[in-house]
Amino acid sequence: QVQLVESGGGLVQAGGSLRLSCVASGTIFSNRVMGWYRQPPGKQRELVAAITSGGSKYYAGAGKGRFTISRDNAKNTVYLQMNSLKPEDTAVYYCNAQGDNSYYGPPLYPWGQGTQVTVSS
Image (tube, rainbow, N blue to C red; front, top):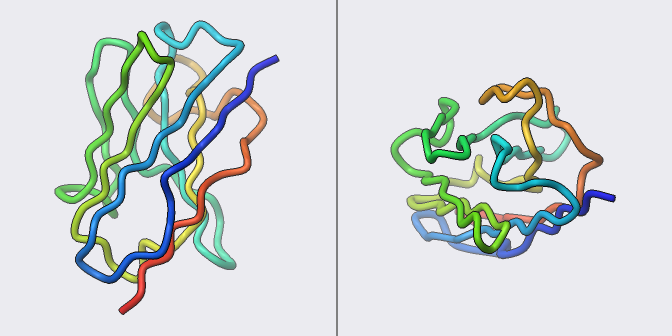
């Protein structure tokens, strides 16, 4: 059974930084494209960034230039470093493995609990 456990969220002032982590178990992590998603209050979940097993990266518009995705295959962990945070980054952040070996998914597994990021102005 695949389990995704996100952590690292919190309350931060605009302009601050956070580093999110996601540990995946029950899957061959090193073979998977991994993605970070977020769901702002009252809105649909959206893809933020994705990274291939070899380290190639994709960023959606919102995080370009501010967010950095990385992974540690030995630890089955994917990270999202978020800098210059804005109030509009407020959301629950989730990770998932991406289907079709694609940056864009669809997400493969049941969602974890996510981690709340709140950015105050």
